[in-house]
Every structure is written in structure tokens, then in C-alpha cells.
Amino acid sequence: TTVILSLLDESPMHGYELIRTIRERTEGIFEFGDGTIYPLLYALRDKGLVKAESEITDGGRLRKIYRLTPAGRAALKQHRSDWRVFARGMMLALKRT
Image (cartoon, rainbow, N blue to C red):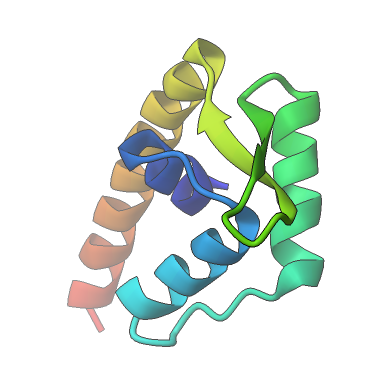
């Protein structure tokens, strides 16, 4: 969820673009397929964190572009804060082993 919100904070994207961007940025460590990304996007939409807008491509195909809502930006801020605390805790714990 945090990764998706963060990417949509940078730029609106369609589902496949999110999949590709996540794969590229994480050097393949995170590999999400359609069966993962789209249910997450629908859940985020249902919570009011993203909105979907239909767009027709140059080839005449219809696709949905997802954008953050103001509630999505607020949620992202909280998610990032939570992850920073979690990451700090992990670093502190791992330093001792």
C-alpha cells in the first residue's frame, strides 16, 4: 500500500505502469502481478485514498489512471512515518546480531 501511494504521489499511473515501475525501482525484488495490484487499487479506491479516471489510449483502448486524493496524501504521510519507525527498529535490532 505504501509503495503504491508513494508512486501515485509522484505521478498518476495506470495499473501496468505501477507494476513496471515497482519492478524497475526495486530491481525485481518486488514483483507484483495483476492479481495483486488491481485488488489493492480497488481497495484504495473504495477507501477514498485514490480515484480512478478513464482514459482512451492512442490505440483506442480504455484504461484507468489512478491518482491520489487528499485523503490518500494524508494516509501516505502516516504510512511513511510508520515505516520509518519500523525501519529504525529493525536497524537497531539487527545491529545487535
